[in-house]
Every structure is written in C-alpha cells, then in structure tokens.
Image (cartoon, rainbow, N blue to C red; front, side, top):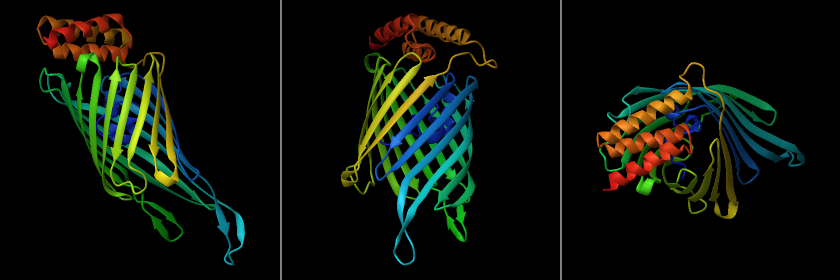
Length: 331
C-alpha cells in the first residue's frame, strides 16, 4: 500500500509501522517478511504479537538487513577481499488501548517499542539503542459505513551509531497516518495516506488502497512520492485462510530493478492463559451484535460481526449476521 502503514497496521506488523496498532491485535500472531531488493540487498523481519487481554499486547521483533559483499581495494587500488556489511535489531514492544471502544466513543491507543541495534562494516561494528513511539485513534462517527483512523509514529529515535570517531545517525522517521475504511456490499475498502518526515529521505508522502473481498482475497495498490528512480507505484495481493495469511508486494525501481516482498502471518493455536477463552470472547461479540440489531443500530452490528470474523474467520453465524445487518443497513 505504498508504505502507508501508520494508521492501518493492526497486526504483528504494527510494531514496524506504529506500535500503537498492537493494541488492536485480537489473537496471538507470528509474522515474517522477506524483502528481496536490488543490488544484493535483502531485508528480513520477524514479529510475534501476544495479546495479554483485549487492548493490551506484547511484542517481540527481529530485523535483519543484509548486503552482498562489496568489492574491496587497498590504498594502491589493488583489489582485496570483499567488504561485508549488514545490520540487525532486536526489539520489544507494547500496545494498549487507553480510551473508548471505537463504536460508542473514539478509541485511543498508544504504543512503545525499544530495540538494540548492531551494524557491521568491513570487520568493524557499532551498537546503539532506539525507541519507537506511536498513537492511533479509531473513530466510527455514524451509521454510514465509515471508519476513520488517525495515527502518528516516531520511529528509530536514538543516539546513533559510532564507528571509531565517526557518528552515523539512525534513520529516524516521523509518520502521520490517515485512513478511511468503508464496507461496500460487505467487503472492506481502505484508503490510506502517510505524510512522512525522514532523516534519510526528507519529506515524502505514501498513499495506498486495499480492497478485501469476503475477508479472503486482498488487492492492494500504492504510490510513494520522492522516489528518484522509478515511478513510485507499488502493487500487491494477499490471501487469507482461517489461520494463515500470505502476502506479496512488488515495486519497480527503473534501471535498478524490482523489489519483491513476501510475507507470512500465522495465527497461533491455544488461548492465552491470562485472557478469557476465545470462545467466551466470540460469544460476547456475537451477543452484542444481536442486541445492536434489535436496537436498529445496523452499522454497529455490522462492525461487531466483522470483529467476530476476526476472532473466527469463516464462522457461519457471524457471516449470516453480517449479511442481515448489511441488508438492513442498505435499506
């Protein structure tokens, strides 16, 4: 989605874009991404999100950036052994809901991430730490089928890396995310935009659109300004089964080549002991959906059945409730 994730990330990847989104993770998840870039650069990301209870989630994450060996030369210009470079980061995060539930009142979520960073260059290494901060509010103002999100994240705040006497600053970035989500015909359409202020890349904007069909197939397009090589467009697709989601994204960079990103998200089995059993959580959501239907609050009922499908994708009662709520709402 064009790298616009500050307002829409609500799974284990939220630790990367905006740690406040961790508060919206409904069940334990393990997510992994492999990003094959050009010029021998590759990036891997692994993230585990574990809800302690509704609106309270812990996270562990690991990032690795690898670079193919570079040509080395001595002071006389003679070729030497290849120069190796790379970086790793190990982090912990936490997201929590502070106010509201997003239906009767705007929901305010906050997140914090801490990570240790290590970089290697030609046999030398440097270490430092970094902090990520995030806020995310979710607001459903009426029964017209819309949901608004506003997010802010400050990423990679820290003192930087020091190789001998030279200081290398961290790639600090500030993201302000805005997203609008509607549900035409029971599907989910999301539009998002992130203005970004980056220490490495200056000011740019990221835009994305996702259309999720029956919570199974997701089609994505994105655009990023400020890309010096290539047009800045991205495309992707996602497939979601009951416990597994597979994602693919593609970004062209002109003469440099293409970037390919594969992602896998797995819903982990077993209930978290410190939270109520998943069956009780699903029952509570379904009961609230039925009550809202009786009160004629069809859009809120639609949201509750959507939450039920998040807890149990493919649940027939939730699908039937969503169908009836959508029919009533469209009338």
